[in-house]
Length: 271
Image (cartoon, rainbow, N blue to C red; front, side):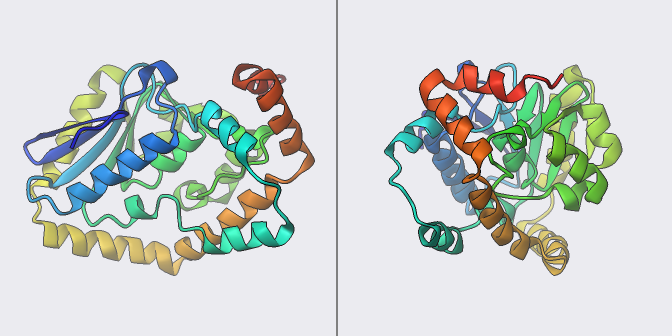
């Protein structure tokens, strides 16, 4: 299958999916997410794939959600009542559930920036390996009224670091992320592709039925810690936060001033 926003290549049973909007620093729009999930679905049933690596073309892994895409959706959105919002969050699926529940191992390969929606993608993979100078965080918490539609932070780093990151929107580098458990390993940027390739190659040698069983039991352990229920609560929290005063000002600036000025306003005062 051919795609417009991603590249796919299989070598020695490792499927590499490359986010391919480098001019937008691989910002996630609806098409890219749809194509990514379609590629994962196809990989699930392919005997040629034993492990999946998700990485980014150009200077960054992923700069988050595409603000131009969000602005367009905002312009087209009809006014909603509190009941509309409640029902939407009750019915909405886990946005990265298909990735999290894949029966084959997934690795996120982070370089450059992995921020906002990029972290949602990365932390729903099984293992994250980062360049030691990668920049990781969730700046939307500063003003956009977003807490993120998924929440894996507390599971990965515990409550204190989760609060530091989610109450400031600050970015940390890959080396710091590895030291607190946010990523499994950080390596020099020049060694990142080789390091990910070695681990992916080892995982790809394991038969699929054993991968599926062992991945499932690891995921079930997190389910017993409330992971799936928390994602449902997070969808509601994120949606309600988006109705606040700060989010209204963000939406006004996004629509009237454009994404660049809206981001400048959001981040002024933060180093």
